[in-house]
Length: 215
Image (cartoon, rainbow, N blue to C red):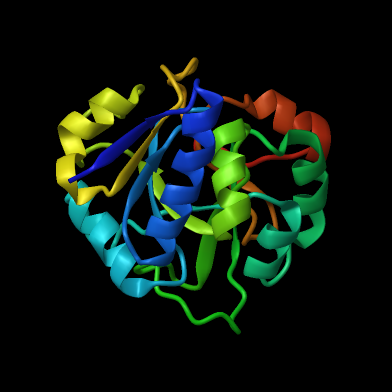
């Protein structure tokens, strides 16, 4: 039976984060609020948990989930390197709605799906998410909805779609911004925009100069 914790109550938030962290360590799924929409998350280093996450969403291995981190240090441990632009982008926009696609650290034993040797990593600007991530370490997190359905902006919406496939729901109230994170690919010589989102391209160019787009 799924459990939901009201994170506007300090006592429930503390217990909820501890229960969610314990569930993640057991390889179970949790739902957490982020600075964009609600996310469904699992331990990034437990392949069965990542498979369960994709299954709960009705998604295949061809759409691997991004990884959320609670610290910049955790992010740098996941990637081969941030390239010439990554650190400046991290300094300017993290924590926040910018997802960076980098070459993954080849020494790590994990399986997020068909990633082609890359990892999409982000540090969210949400206190509950950061509290949880600092307890669990890196988590594979995707939007908390069934594939093809609208992303959940409340814990209740997430629970209607995902039900008992999730062990713990952390209810942080309605999310204030439905705009997804901006996704930027740093694996090529010129940073390439993969998805327009909460951080406009102009702001990215203000930090690193040229950004390739499809238009």
